[in-house]
Length: 573
Image (cartoon, rainbow, N blue to C red; front, side, top):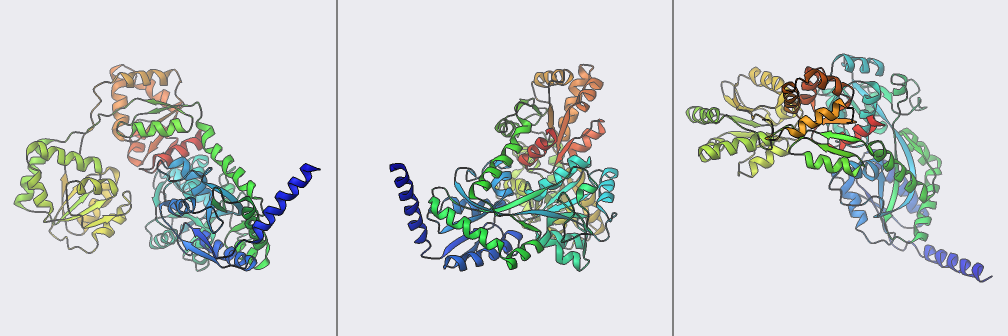
């Protein structure tokens, strides 16, 4: 009897607490820009939620860092039910496993409110692309390695990993082109900058209906009622599916009765016919759930990202990023085997650097393009040794300086070099050309720092504008002083003791084979690597591996190491 009275007392207390809530507006943080799927969904649900609670639900967009900034704000808010946030698979599950500096603990800093919808994505192609169906796209990608360009709304996000999963099952390669938001994806597909993109149904639909892009497939396991004539990607790549989820969270410590009240009202809101219809038209499938269900799904999907790598021996040939890679492997339960194939610091030809400075003093360059942080630091290290740094800085002050990506930007700023223009994406030549803009280059000198396979396209574009291209001497990677770890790695590969090998640089491939050649094991190494899952960051290292007749099993776009390892885990699974 005492137990019954106690339970009833607790329930009454919780009910009274919930009945007094809310007595002021509720702030709903959406960690993405307006008009994206999460924003549209939250405005629909927020309006109904406000009606049911008798208080306004104010939508506050806080985009940035793939949704981390907004969720961090939620995590640091008072746990009183007046600040809640919109979460999804990307910022609640994927990012905690692919980002080193995530500011919150997705499992500990939030309490789940409701799983509101699941979603599938649209794979769209340019109208003038050399393929018209998902099957033809896969065939094109297989026949033209790395020529399929695929746009997503960010590195390591749900759309990126959804396409990586398609690549693993489909056995093809592609070049990833990340953007800051979904709207720019379709714009550049229409403009011909990229061939394909993967985005939300809401983003794709108006452009498909206006015949500006072609919808090739949906990532749902079967066709969907909204687009019955569009195939599921699984029709071309059997076994494929990729679906995400959206839900709502509150700061950890939010009273249970408030969480249950919000869960009940959100579930009621998404049942309403006008809301349900609009969600379906946005490519969302409604889910009525208990608060605990979203937490279980989040934990299960996090385990799925970890489990395939547990106990696996992963060989890491990177020197500078090797420790970071090893930490990421270990965090996923893997066993890192660190055998650097490169020296810590690259070398530059001192004579070539001196010649370059003298040549520029005789005839200055109108434009200077820097494309790699390592090469930029190596350049200034060389001029420091030659006593030429002040003269080089004076020359750069007379040029328009264009930078390709954050790493050379940081290297130049450390030397107080003025940066005039920057390309946001360091791996897309068209962004470099856009940064150059309408500069008059006819009969002008342009100094260009080399950057792998992208140089031919850039050189052709500069030559077409009448520029004289002068090369900044590139750096050379030498073998590390101690090659014993490489020799031991070759032996471990021969004994099939390595589950996967990660390459991030073409010189790593060449140096590893050079050590094998000294031991008379070049063919044995090739055979061993082809019996191992080989992962590569970027097209340059992939090209070197293929030149060595080694099959590349996993390829990721640099510089996101977490995204590489997530793709690697998918392949190991």
